[in-house]
Length: 313
Image 1 (cartoon, rainbow, N blue to C red):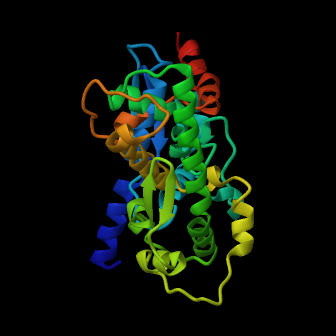
Image 2 (cartoon, rainbow, N blue to C red; image 1 turned 45 degrees about the vertical axis):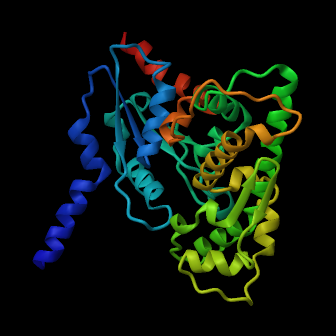
């Protein structure tokens, strides 16, 4: 074998999730192991899990080392599950937390197991972005005073309306993403920036590009062929736009909308908003800590990690 191939194989072995897991695993320790796709996932899932485990227990996170190809992280997690001899391990102690992505649309096969959690929507961000997180972000991170029930309802209605408009307007882009995945393209999705696509006001969203199809192809470095139609895909996604919108885009919208409220709250009619201080940076880690864990994940924790801790004694 050529030296280059030997070195590449050695690098892959070191970065293999199974190898990393074995170097960290301690069977009889007061430790819970979470295998996740990315660093942001660690932040969020730690936040949820810490409410369920005793103080003398430790959460050990193992993160997939991914390239920039579409869904390579999820594939690594699935490979880890399939290659692990679960007769040697307790599934309640080792949980695998996977993004759903577009697997429903793509008919992808994700293993079903009691220690695999699949997000309700595209990713965990889809569960984070909602009006409850929005209100807590404004009052706890952006220093707005608590609102009375009438003003609160008005504000949340504004947010929910614009969130709905955003997700529906993203259907075209998400339809192309489905098409690209089905045709084994490798689009640079990270180049799609919400601020470059929309002008976002507290009560209005409008497209910036004249031709959104051409724009998204250019940004994602994919050749645009006008003869291709994604209308059938769009019709499928339109059944639940919030579920199928890429989580990173939702978080970008969420940040932009919160910043719009911060910068223009004095100009919003019929809602009495006031602040007591300056907003902190709206980083994901801060937003994660003011969001609630979805019911599906709480049930998952109770059926795995909590059972393991109780059996451990």
